[in-house]
Length: 155
Image (cartoon, rainbow, N blue to C red; front, top):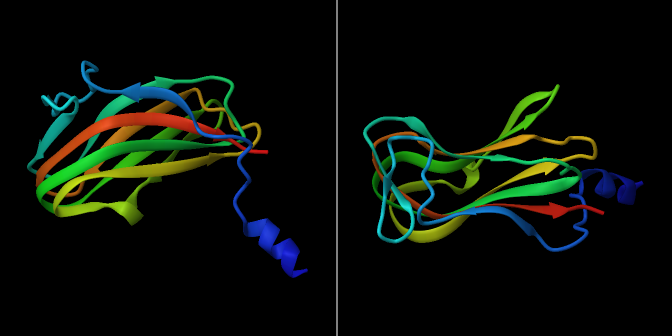
């Protein structure tokens, strides 16, 4: 009985290593006009108020029963409030669903570090569009680079 309960709440097992769907670096232009390109191949956000910055959208097909991972390197300067990654998945006929990186958010001043947000898709949940955002809940500067979307198939 105990093993059945553990299996019920344990995450699915990967069927292989993660595979990159799309990587954004350098000359890519984010959707939001509130972003400035940097010489490090990334972008800077100078936030004066709480906002969600729309970075990129990725059209995909034929992906389900997997974990999507939105990963990026972030750093901050004098960030009042939190800054975190946010991923939205649009599933045709089902709506839009999100995953937000509350548990691993920036605050204050931080050097470069890698951050990620997972999104679990069950068999039959096939998104057609993934939106990659950065949410800043206050004022301050945030830099982002090495943005990527990957997936890990499940057994």
